[in-house]
Length: 372
Image (tube, rainbow, N blue to C red; front, side, top):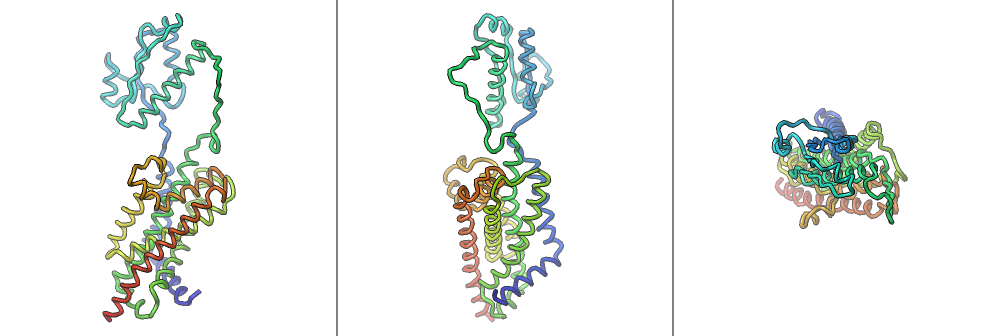
């Protein structure tokens, strides 16, 4: 290793150790982000308030009402007045089920009984979940009571593969790793780079004759080591708290994490080179880094749902590919055959971002040198 690169790396690590604020950014905030995102984000809707107006008041209608609330998905909501729509208007319930007066009589006679279901469509996704759940519960109730023919020419027996227990942490936590390990290493690198410019100590670096590539490589190595320690802490505690373990070969995750951290640090250095102040660097990481990693990576919803032309931006977001690597390691377990291309894309992004940072810093170094 070049002695000047090694000296630059050691200098950065010493400065990092002396700065308590930077230490907090490196380890305390990532852990808080892991806990907040890991516990707060839930994609499966539960405890949905529902009001039921039973105009039949028969044992069969009461049995149907009990079946609706037999799971944790729906919970009864109190409402006053004669019209259950008022409960929807006041926001006291997300759905209203109205059982007609002839409900049991028509079912026992082998006729169709219509149940009116009103669903709050403010949230289109929740409305779809509520509608499907009510329909599935109704079908189960009819089969259980023998009110429909149970014999079917085709009977589908469905199993959930990779995650049969439907643990949401297996989906959320590996995605949180991608968001956390992109934001904070890039933030630290950006602040470190722009601090040199604000304090004018970068002029001393220029006077030493060190090249732009050597300067950035020394800083990148320092914060790559910091990012590695951050990854060990975050992933280790994430596994202990959320009980998320490896499902297969962990080597793609190890290689992919190193490449991903290099990409994040290079992105931070690029923003630090292009920013005039620490505030501008922080805003750049927050706006460009955080929003793309959170919204355009497939962390919360599938990438296929991202409309054009934002889908083009999503194609160059490294977090998109690291999420696939992380979820494969903790959920699918297919190993290299399934994520080799994703690891390669993350590596290429690290090289491209570092080259862009070097290209941006080189002319600045020459200009400052000529100005002396």
